[in-house]
Length: 105
Image (cartoon, rainbow, N blue to C red):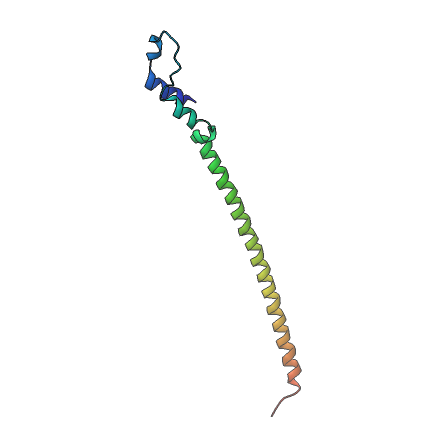
């Protein structure tokens, strides 16, 4: 809001003190200022930055969650791979034991 007042003061200055009658003529600075400040969030740079940061934070949380889920899936795959390796070793040993009685000449 101070920005509007500063802009008005810089353009109009003290010229309003010399006016003796009311005028309905709009000053050229007022219309664009009114249009620009209809949405305070769009006009205020700090709130825009805060909104952008909030959006970025949400995206980062989603990314971190997906990375953690991927890590959990990788851990499950490693466990399944270890189980499969142990099962294949057991199968190999049992197959060797079963084939040892039937030696071919």
